[in-house]
Length: 528
Image 1 (cartoon, rainbow, N blue to C red):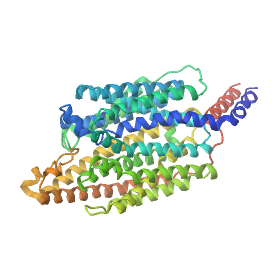
Image 2 (cartoon, rainbow, N blue to C red):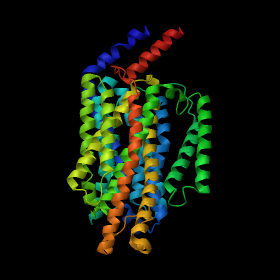
Image 3 (tube, helix red, strand yellow):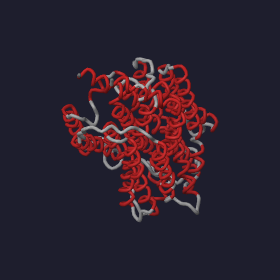
Image 4 (cartoon, rainbow, N blue to C red):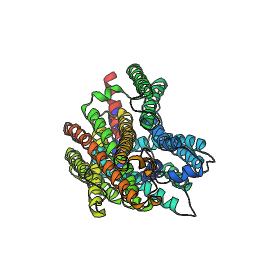
């Protein structure tokens, strides 16, 4: 009786599903774009912000990492809540938090309030990042998901890479200024909330729930401790110091405790059982490594443009566009072809190979690399990342029970974000050490005056230095940046190996909500 009464619902929804999906996606995409933009738009604005608010170098680091840390640490909690509560309400709550954080940041009188506002922004952005993919999986069958997830991959990539360009333009425009880096997203986020209220219609399942608050707390504390270490090591203290031992040891102990708690919780934040699924485990590894490639590529290429090539923040942002277009085209085209053919593994493997090629090509850059050639190398990296990023989520979502869609999606998002955050911090420390070593070799006693050689974040003001010193500094930064991409090559090889071992399975033709209804009907009939 239950099974037959559940069948008409999908059929009734089918004729209007495409239009309703596109309407709902408009709100999701706007929200997703501004939440990602928040992480990247401050990159080129930070020097001006720090000067205006009289901040220190430590504050410089924390304005970047606080938002990323809060976003990364809260993604699993948002994903779990999506399996238990109203997805529509949760996504609007996350957008509301993002608006609050953005308003506080834009109107901040000092750096302390700015750091707090970035944490609030991060919690909201974490919800938006995790929940948008969960909502898509609930509405759209995996067979059709490629068509839409390609668009989302493009939005994610554009938000990541275009952020520094938008930030540079706002800072360079006298009648706007850096505060608009935060305020710009507020009206768009409010529009997203209104759009979702009018267009998103998902059934709310009422059931007894137990949220694993202890597990959530332990995961957040453990991850935050490791992220704090990776963002400060090599800058505030040495990599091989007691601080490193304490933070890494403490973080790992807390995470081990979290695993123990999660294995015994009735409703765990991260169900450990999902890692027994080979597709989920391998997609998680690959997602973390893709995060390193994507975030690392954009952050350090921006610095390379400004220091090694002597470009302004706005021009540096424009030079990032080949990577944006590569990502946009590849994710959209791959999504369409996956929907048409139902085959997806070939795109994952091709994405891994192309990303590896992009990393290898960028490892050859120097201070004399031409703009056109550099654009081609970046486009290759963008094409590879675009084919991999969202399709890893699609592969995992297709291979788990509908009741675990939220947790699985958030786990992949979480590890991609954490890979990016730790990757940027670790690669930044490597860059700082290489720059210091190379400047000391070439300038000797003048290295200290040569322009922030030992500084992970600050960009040397080459306009105030003699021409011979500028040439040396530009060569040093070009060499050090190329070495970072060389380090990225073996990481990309690991991502490709993980993808090769993922087994291709036919894409399901039912949406997450329809699959969940069938799973519950089957469980109910077997119980009787």
